[in-house]
Length: 110
Ligand SMILES: [Mg+2]
Image (cartoon, rainbow, N blue to C red; front, side):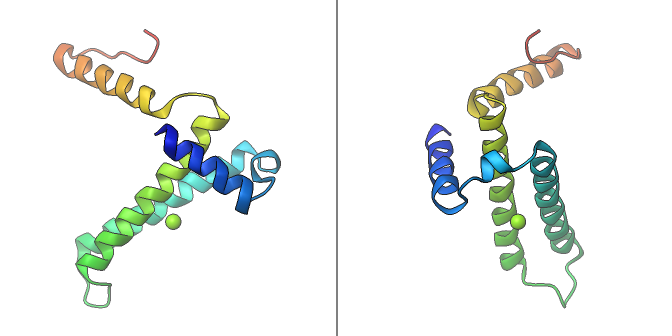
């Protein structure tokens, strides 16, 4: 995950100069929401299996691509808010395991 973040920083600095400094938090929030919407749309098409839609294999690749877009925005958000996405994901998985075992609600930091 750190390698992905390092690469994203390099991409932003090289090809999107100033984007981090000149982009509002609300924009990043909208951007990730947009990518989630794109992912949902391809999942919808995959499920409905309409003849005019792309093939299942193409839709599967679109789903992978939109998932990657979401991960890129999550990496950027982790950089802006200064948290380790990989570590936080592990912690959240542990919380989810705890919840399932104990049927209790628990959040990060508790
Ligand atoms: Mg996209």
